[in-house]
Length: 86
Image (cartoon, rainbow, N blue to C red):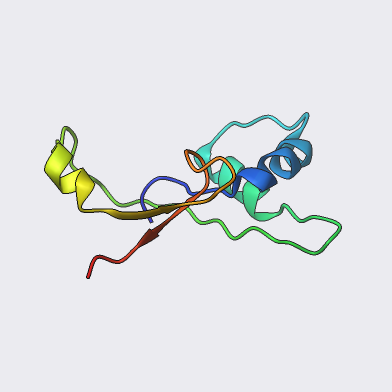
């Protein structure tokens, strides 16, 4: 799973859901995120990633240029889709 990927539109709902609750562990945080819903019925799925990842990996500009990123018209610096490379 890697680092968390959270839809930006859900941040306010997550914040409201954990308001006033002590964030004492990663498990508590993940469970509070996973318990978040909206009045429209949107739900968040969250799980803890316990994998170990190497540190200090450098991605070159050439490697990054090969990533197929489709940026949204609205705030493409935040809203984008990464498509598989062909």
